[in-house]
Image (cartoon, rainbow, N blue to C red; front, side, top):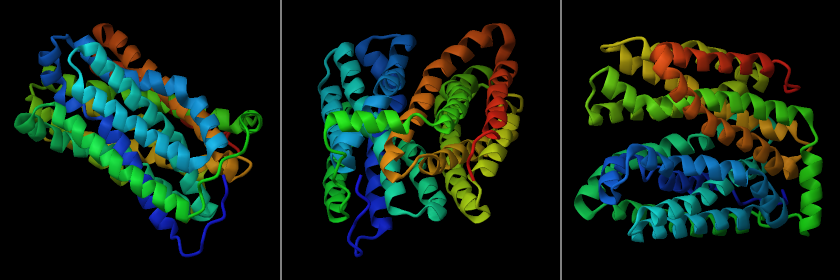
Length: 393
């Protein structure tokens, strides 16, 4: 990926359009969760089938992680990001027109392709336009893509569905992705960030070379352990609040939004702190320890303490992706290999997203909520210990 860009193109403008396409992808991903009861009724499916509307994104992410890195190396960030938004638009269009559940699930899989491509391309672009000593804050801002996209859909989807039908939620996601596509291509072209690495064989060789490093795989493992432990409680938070704490569905959704809001604060804060202290490794390890120690607390408290506990855990949750993404370019040989490093990290993350909910669901019947989540917290603390071995500033 070429780092040359005209001086008049602001790195912050590039970050803005990168953030826009990322949020557009997450809006598509989170189009389904607020509509689950409506979709279950419309397509006459049970909760396990409905859950596949989200798990398909994790499965697609595992399959697509390294091909996405290859696409980035071969075709460059502009084409990769454009392909991501086109996939989101097509996937949302299929979903909106779906008359049976299989078609809806297929549309979700196409949307997942877009999310997978964005997850690899976006941080590579951020790394290309900001110097190493200033990447923490921009990466922290970009890492808010999931909280922001998720909160927007939780706020917008119920009202849209009630007024115009559930299909309108997917139409909205397609419109946002279309606008993001136009802005992204225009800004990256002006910034000189549109070129790839040449032939497919050369791109594959560069990908293999970039992935030979020990530390990028160690970081991927650490992030995978974190994803395993964090995805599972997030998946079942609403179920826990409704079944164990007698929350209404709407009140439980507000607590879920609190977690996302906390994650956004933690994301920016951790990025800023890591830039200030000049160390990614120390901040990453400390954040992992804090998150591991706090993870089970919301499941052990009640009353007014419960939403506060979930918010605080959300702050700790959001700090870890921000530091992880900022660390990837510093572990690779140069900006051109950042996409390969992100592919490894995203593979670890999506593998954890597949494993985590299954693991927690198998533990709860015999151990209960608190002990089961505490078992997952041990994985985070193991990740913190492994993080100490990272050869990272």
